[in-house]
Image 1 (tube, rainbow, N blue to C red):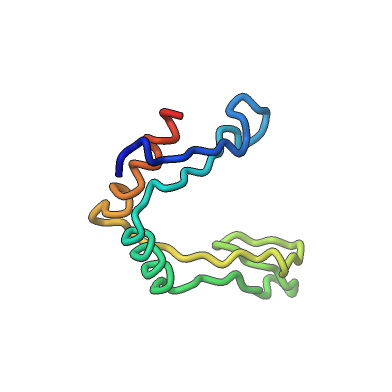
Image 2 (image 1 turned 120 degrees about the vertical axis):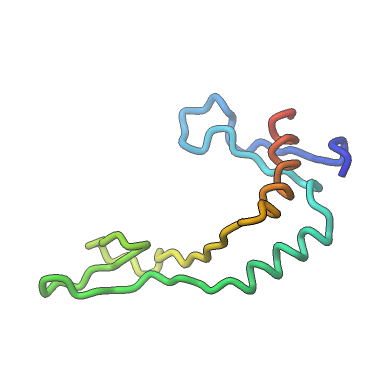
Length: 103
């Protein structure tokens, strides 16, 4: 895609005192075919759910291998993991990063 097709929208100013400083959205950086590929990949990946475990008589929430004594079951993350062995996804997303840097 042509870099002039990209539209970068800043969500949080890069100078803001915030952990998400510089966050942005890059529109029109991926083709419809690339988006379909990413959607298909996401649907094919197994989902890893947070779970509860009994430890020393106390029920603790386990999120990504970390124990959490606060029960926040409504905030439990579910995640999927993918190893981009051939750098296919990385190459696809490089245009987004370049567009964001040039904005």
